[in-house]
Amino acid sequence: MNIAALRERIRVAEVQEHEQGSLRAWLSQQLLQLHPAITPGDDPLDTLQRLAEGYIAEVPDTLEAAQAVADSANMRAQLLPVLKVAEAFFLQPPDLPADHQGMLALLDEAYLVHRLVEEVNDRYIAHGGEPLLPLDTTRANVIVHQLLGDTFANQLDLAVSTAVEGLAPESLFSSQTFDDFRQIIAQRGRIALWQDWPCLSRQLGVEIRLRETN
Image 1 (cartoon, one colour):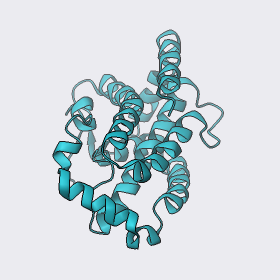
Image 2 (cartoon, rainbow, N blue to C red):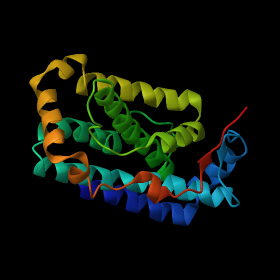
Image 3 (cartoon, one colour):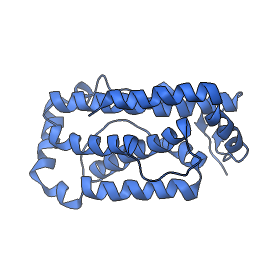
Image 4 (cartoon, rainbow, N blue to C red):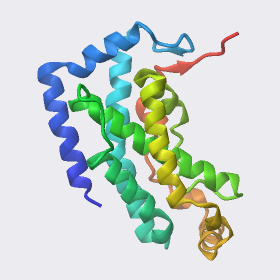
């Protein structure tokens, strides 16, 4: 895992954003068509920019924390393939729109990473296990999906689904690997294993809320 390369990509993009403001300009356009269920508060543009920047910045922290857990909790076989695909999504993503540069390109790539985590977790939970990576990104992913637009976000979701088929096929959940994973969680306790795990919802704050719609 090359966590330093992930952070360097973000650093360079942040400098570019400070000079050009491309992400902020793009977000201002998306704000005009924001779904009414998403309420970004009194300063919607600032809130959306904080969301996007926090969502991107969480990627290396998430992968670094997961790598540390994998190395210390006998979970390398389960976690490392997921982490390597997530890293590749960020450093060598699928083709992105030509006008998605800088922080906007990283938003696309962060969406791929967080959706990968979400899909893998869903498969583990559906088969009676604990989340492999206990980070709840569902709400943030819904918001970023809507910002990116259904057509493009669905293309990214398809790339994630294809990757997950290889990382968590049905055969995995009848294997000794999955039984071993469940035993580790049962013996050590999920709270103890993940006590230092970064919480995405806390980092991004409560400024963006999903409200009930009739």
